[in-house]
Amino acid sequence: MNIIKKINQIITGYVTENVEGAEVWVVSWNARYGSFHGEWERKAKAFMVKKDAEAFCQSLEDAKKLLQYTEGIGIRLEQQK
Image 1 (cartoon, rainbow, N blue to C red):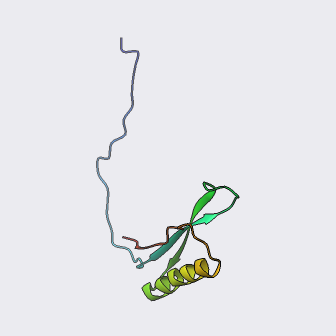
Image 2: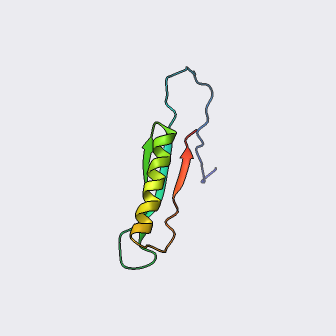
Image 3: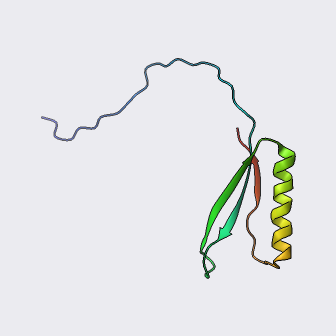
């Protein structure tokens, strides 16, 4: 008698189809929410045009300089695949 039993789910087949999508550019950065070094969370905004995403990245950099913020905020621009 087998007391220990594990159920595994497997895929035996599926149907594929083509659907419309969009090219998306995501800008992400670390946002502070508290007084301590480790109190931050990752934020992101999505753009349909790379030029707009690049302009937003530059805006984040400019704001950081204006505020004289010396800690890195990890600004990243990625094309979603």
